[in-house]
Structures are given as structure tokens and as C-alpha cells.
Image 1 (cartoon, rainbow, N blue to C red):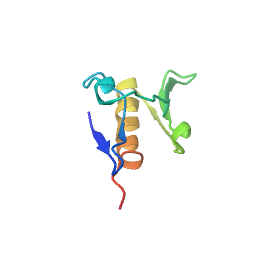
Image 2 (cartoon, one colour):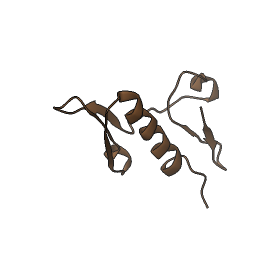
Image 3 (cartoon, one colour):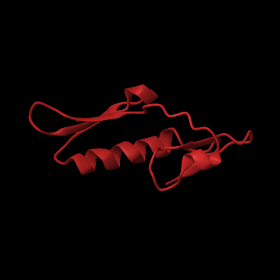
Image 4 (tube, one colour):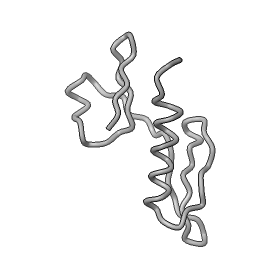
Length: 81
């Protein structure tokens, strides 16, 4: 689990249970994406809640989740330049 801490001490992360985020303060949790099946049983990662694209389709849900996480880490958790 990757945690990004800004100069104000605000922590950002893709939610996972590897770290108890409440130990860092009161968490604010918001949906960043949706991984859903399509009519053919393929999977897409819709990143529109984060201002991103729809990725896929993928044959496996795990592939869509991996692509979702990679996009979020690169585009929403990247440290500022």
C-alpha cells in the first residue's frame, strides 16, 4: 500500500486494509473508480470518478483491478512535480 503525505500532513492512498488509516487521523474515503463486468463477461475499470478513462475490456477481473490500481497510483498518487 502506497501512502503519499503532502507538506500539510494530508495522507492519500488507494484504500486497502494493509494499514489502519484511522491511526493516521480521521479518514475521508471517496470512490475513485468502478470495476464492473460488461454484457459479454469481460471487465472494465471505469476511472471517471477520478477524472480518468475507462480501461479494458479485460478477460479477468484481476487484470482490470491491476490496471485500475496502476492508473490510480500513476495519476492520482504521483507526487507533485
